[in-house]
Length: 94
Image (cartoon, rainbow, N blue to C red; front, side, top):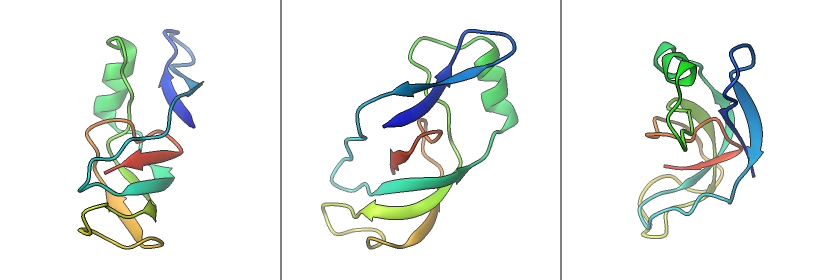
C-alpha cells in the first residue's frame, strides 16, 4: 500500500513509500481514503519530522472492511474520519 511519508528534504517535504496494509483493531473499520486535508500542524511536523512519522489526521473515503466486532458503518458507507496518524495513505484503520 502507498503512503506519503516525510522525505527529509526542504523542497519536497513528502515522498511515496510502500507499507503493509493497516491492521485494524476489532472495533476499527478500514477506509479506502479518497481525500485528505493538509493542515497547518502537519506542515510544521514535516519541517522537522520525528522518525516513523506518518502524517494524516483528516480523511474522507469509503469503508472497505467493517469493524470485526460489528460496530460502526457497513462496507460501502461514505465516511469522514480523524485518525491519530497515517491518513495520507491509500487505506487507513479508524
